[in-house]
Length: 605
Image (cartoon, rainbow, N blue to C red):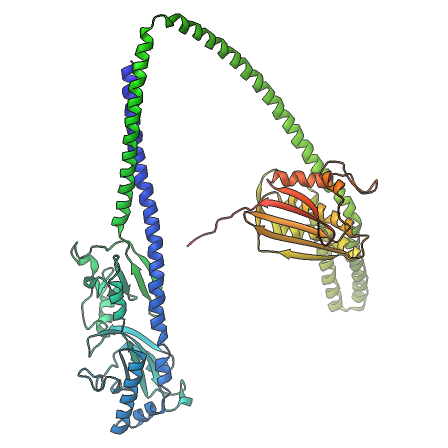
């Protein structure tokens, strides 16, 4: 029987070991993949910034050159060889200084009449580029730049083309037909050379998904997916890739496809390009296998130790079984254990009974605490009654006056004035409804259910309840509020805490020469801090020691029950926070509420 149990235990341990090794492999692979993607994103971002900087650096060059007087002069008189030669020299000097591939000028029919490579065997002069989209776009729009990437029709060298229309005079730009087009060609070959140092494949594709720049030469001028016939015809018509038929990368051999798979991507430029990085999945599998091997080695060591310990335990049991004299002692020990078990069972039953009583007492205490909180709110409502009555009296008086006027206007047949008075009556009624809704929300019993509470919103709600008293007493209220912060609790109870602290501050400054209260809400680490400071006389040390005790108050008889701060402290503690009081160095008191910050996750792209 013992042998059977041992076999079952060994089987379970072996299964657990296999599961542990496999879980280690999965977790390590996941972490490695996450790290690899983060590293790839950073690398892709740096490459994208460099590439966009090169593309944008020369964006205004053709626009600036189109304003040169000699450009319009050459277009007006292309037979003037001296003028054409001078412009060729100027374009060549600018091209060498700007370190770009070429600058060239075409007439309205697309014929090149001047170029920076005028003295090269593969000069653009005499070539017609009217079929290129960068020529057709600017001629049709009459303004704005044209952009295109293609393999050079003359040089067979790929490049990025930027073009601008040229007009007979600067004042005719956009209002008349262009007389020519000025274009610059930018080579991206340096990026391709720089990417070759990367172990991971990097590729840049156009809006059709055709890869035209990559550190994998065999991928160039192949598409990420098979292209339909219409796209193929469009590419052929513009000779974008020198008439090449574009095939998908998936048509390559397995060896040539090495590294092609899931990729990270970023949009680039104005032509719908996509910059792609293909992370090496082999690194992910290697990291998982290495971690699994370490876990397996550790389990083997633990298994060896466990086997040695188990063998030693067997030898000890055999030695004990051989000692017959210990049988009687074992029987007595069993009797004692049984007695002890009965004693523990009885003690456990007694403890459960005590625990039930404690639970009942806790329920009574919680119910009493909730009633104290409600009593405190009702007492606060009584203190605010005069101010709220004043707030309601104003719109009520306005309603009566507007109603009397409306009756007079109605008798006189002045319906426009009657409509205006009714609108004023509606606005005043809406104001009364808002005031009454605030009172009803504050007076109702709050739910024990915890939810996310907007601290700034609760501060404004508390201020709204005391606004009339603040105006009546002429108290200056300063607010130092930060961005929206949330805590876990109840909004009604948090408003009650703020109302209690504000009411105490108002009582403290009422007889002072300076009537000033400040509410500051800030974030300190993982806590939300609410500070309510006043310009009162401050708190004596003897008062601070008993400030949060129930029924302790420094107010005259009949002006308070001494429950406000005790209830506030209880509410804050129930929200896992603290309430403290201290005197300010500049004078007056400061009450500080600290509550745990509720971190609300946001959607991520």
